[in-house]
Length: 383
Image 1: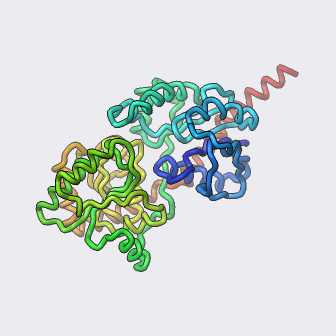
Image 2: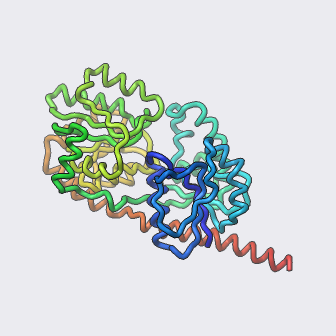
Image 3: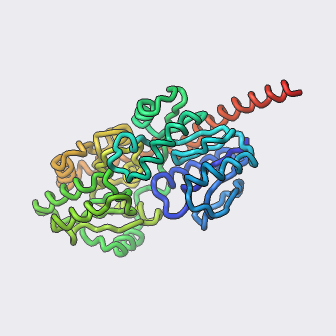
């Protein structure tokens, strides 16, 4: 097969979608190297993609607006290449294109929590996503919770939406190399016990309530810091303002973007990892933390229940008291931390990119065979 792959998510500093795209594509090409893989991007990759040797980049001209490139330029490129199937891993796909399409849609946040998105994104995504979903030959999503939301909001046939969970890279495992741990501790000034958060800094991640819960813990004498790892997203002002209002400027550390190779050490060093997000299609940081042996507190909502299972403490994300009580419980109970550590490592091992790659390849072959059958029939009629 010739497989097209829209790879713009691989550019720059990667977050959830970027890591999903990179890990899935790498695993797919390792699993089925016999296929011809063509990557489409609107910009130069600039070293962000480590070539595996059996893929080629197409259309590397600089075109700064991805949404415009996708609708105005990419259809012509796809007509030139004529892939048997093309996979779009970041919600959107061309509306005017004959190429068979598979689209990954992670969640329905623009429909369920519109107040957490800026106006331009709402207008663009709420206009295009339903049209893309109807046009797609298949939709991949990453949890049963997300599938339910997609069916409810997009009204597409049930059989079109396939759940293929993401995985945890083998890079994420407990770090016991003391030199590596000391280097990360020194770089970020982590000389006290700390609670860790990893993810984009934005309102949907519920950081204001996490900071309020941390403030309650500090008032009861907790010596810890709260370490918030991630890039700044939209509407970060109130989050920083809450830190100042509560007098926590010296106790809450914002590291900014942290390179992938340093994350396992941070997960391994923290006393607990808090991820009380209001809504997630999957929640990859929860699995990464578990894989590294961190005790996790996360939300009793959306996909996080099915991802964490019984290997984390689940809280009502709207309750500051519940968040604080669970973190306090982990601080006071090392046996519970150790129990969650063991359960978390076992739980995270059930999510592999190899399994995701095999399921995705099966879908490629199903869609490709269906399209190839139509093409062969048309050729017979023509001849």
